[in-house]
Length: 105
Image (cartoon, rainbow, N blue to C red; front, side, top):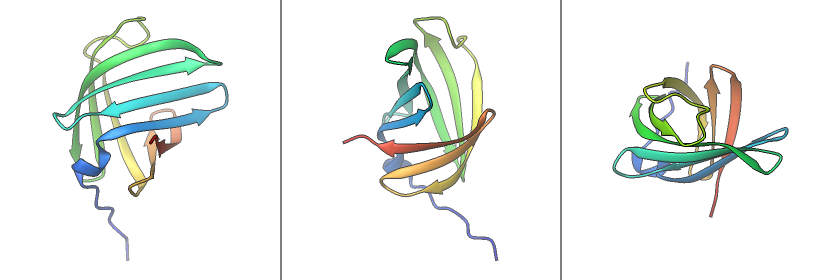
């Protein structure tokens, strides 16, 4: 029997970080369904983005409103699926593979 994840949107709100090789990805999900984030490579910020998010089942939909460094085009959309979720970490499958995020306190 397949186990379905339950992801209360309120638990997604907060600051989350993933580290993959030289990249550090930070997301800040707000309760008003907006987000902001940064991507850094070896400590140098290469993306500083904002947008809106929506959670539908185990799918996270993101629409980017801008990136002050131009890495992500305004109007771009992502659709990621949660593979794991609890109040301290989550794993999503993105278009570029799996990524594990930890809650930043």
